[in-house]
Structures are given as structure tokens and as C-alpha cells.
Image 1 (spheres, rainbow, N blue to C red):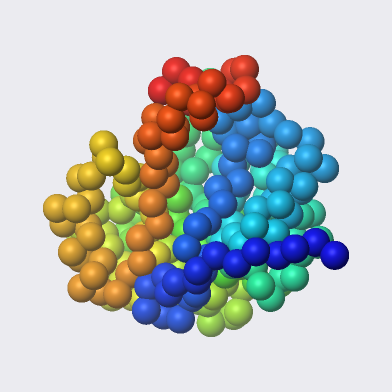
Image 2: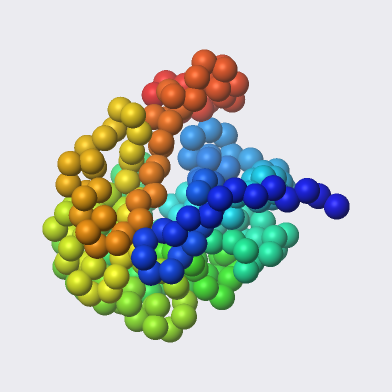
Length: 236
């Protein structure tokens, strides 16, 4: 029998979500930082992370060609106890030709993305659903209104934002409580300490840091030397 280790769990925000203190960002498995893994290898990595105590897994509909990462994560979940996993995914960024991007947050698109992610992940619900980037052409109240409906329908449990401003966070939170805010945060990226962190403390919003090791810089020489060929982290 495989040994399952334990990592301390923490409350993420004050809406009731409990996650492992360490989360696992799955995007790199589908080529976001280096060459993509096969689904079999990616599923093995996710299972190994779970066996070492991680229960909080992060993906997005943006990650991987043709939404490959969500499909891979969905396969991995079939090998794990779903009720012990906190699954986060994201919507809102569309890849266009020439590596251009479009940000979209209309209510219709929110629903389409959520239902598509549920199918790719092959799950009944998403624990934490982030707006990956804020669409400034759509009032955040409209985007949040649709997310609130998805919560009421049981398709998502908690709502998150990513890279949002103080004003946007306040307005969004007034429509429905925000559980988590994902922001870049490391020893050399600390701008959120000025206004964002105090606001999140005030509103009871948890912060999920991405790139906490400064895109690998704070991982140390051994980590950098072990990166596979083609990794974007080598040049960061």
C-alpha cells in the first residue's frame, strides 16, 4: 500500500474552503513552462504529489494545446479520492493566432467556460473557479452575477479572481464573497503588500501566490541546472 503523507491544511478565505498549505500548479505538465508530458506521466506526477500530502491542484482552460491540461487533470482525478481534492481551474483568456490573447468575461462566456471545464475535467463540480484575468470591457458585477448563479446551481463551490485591482475586488465581493485571489508574490515581487493584502485581510479573502520562487530563481542553482531543455524558466 502506498504511504500517504500529510501536509498541514489551512483555511483559504473565510467562506469555508480548506486546502493543503502547498498547492500544485499543473500547467507545466502540459507545456506552459517546458515540453509537455504524456498524460500517463502527468497523471503519475499528480498522484505522487497527492501521496506527498498535496490536495490542492490548480489548472486552467488556457493550459496546454486544446485545453490539454484540464483533460489530463481529469484523468488523474479518476485515480484519486475526489472528496479529498480541492480542484481549482480558471476561465477568461482566449488564445488567438500569433500568440495573441483576448480577455473575455461576459456572462454567456462564463457559463460556457464553466460547463466546458466540467466536461473536460469529468467532474460534477469545481471547488474554486477563478476569473483568470479581468475583462475591463465588462462590468465586474455582470461577470460575478453569472458566477454567483453557478454557485447556486452547485457547479462551482467558491469564486476566485486573479490579478485584480483593489476597486475590482471590492465591487466583485459586493456581489458574492470572493474566496481567493491569485497574484504573483515572491521575494522580488511584493507590490501586493501595499494595498491588496490589507484589503484581502479586511474582506476575508485568501491569497494564492503564483511563482513564489521567482520563476525558479529562488529555487537555487541545483534546481535551475535540473530543468529540462526548452524550459522558459532557464531564461527568466
